Length: 271
Length: 271
Image (cartoon, rainbow over all chains, first blue to last red; front, side):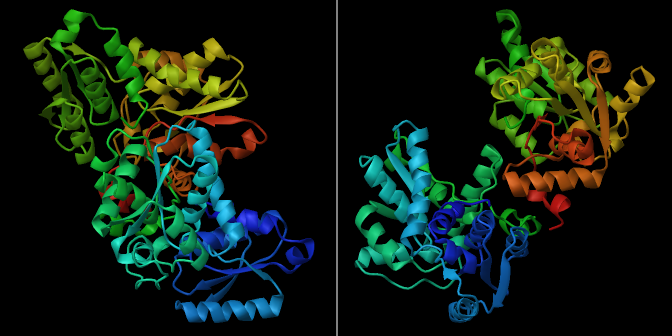
């Protein structure tokens, strides 16, 4: 489905009982989690009820439909999304799978780092991951703690969405910033249980500017020929910004997804 | 360097004598061969003299400069390119490495198919490659003939640049079509020795339309998250167009390169 979210969604849906599966899975997401739930549900022949805000990108809407997801529209604000989700849950009895504030999701996302460690034969000195809701970051930190505790774990956020950075500084959860960063996958509010794990296990969180995100994205597109979305470029930008600190080290970066609307690339590359 | 051309250029330059290396390598190319020669030459500490037409894309010009290539500008027509190259050769004594009509280049390009066969454990039934000058196609056919003669070898061309298709039908070399196809890497004239090999060893050449090329390119970008250039999408389009014929078969496609100007994506994706 073009992003790491399929890991968490698959794990969550594989852990449901037959009765739960019969009633289907519900979630709200404008992004990659929606596609992942739709795909993971279809693999178990279960229904996926996806609440999507009306302003979702058409590519992501089409992908959800393509995987057989049933879309219910909401307004873009979180209140309307949650209210619409409650309605869907009441009507269908479907099980809600939260995009990140859920232990099954965190465990699923952690498999990415587990594989990364295996594939690099324990040669990593450090790893960078992006922080949005915190599902991937908390899973990454737990995988390192379990399999290779000597690896240093770093998070990366856009300055415009630096709620995890701030929360860790203050030692308590803070709400999300206004959704302005180009890294749209990282605009979400940090999850409570994700915060607890990140606060305890992540060494440092680096902030990056919008221009650094787009420069890093362009670098990966041009030199590695891999399509990554802006959110995915955030840890790349963080490493470039802090390269002196990591000189001579083997640093891993988790590239988290590549779902971009090819019809709207002008905003990234100045077409 | 972002394309298969580094294989041929490396092989050609590695086969030069020390005296030849001292005088440098010369070629004319507006595209990936230019970058490949510049990079391969720099690896042997040799000078690369690249004749590029004035209308070359800025991305490719910058890449050649980045690899240390010395650019001499020509007019876009083939006559001016060849005249300018003669001038450069006379002034420098550099060895000319043709982009494709050269046995060392063909041998270098053939290593792509050799690796492909190794990596797929001889499970391929057929393989598709694009045809421009014919370097990759002739190398691919020779590698199959040598290592796995049971594999069927197919070529793919834009209808607007279908000179190899026509040449094989007629049984004799024909000149290039006007350079109109979006697959700019395949606009070049077919090489004489490439034609001989293709005529003898390639089972069939498929033609595709411009729209099919862009659709195939978009599919690879969106679903595989790999950046490919239009020329590289031509064999993908050819397989999609002929999918019934290959139903149930293991078909390999050589993705030949991903050098696109990210500042000009609008022409592909309608930004």
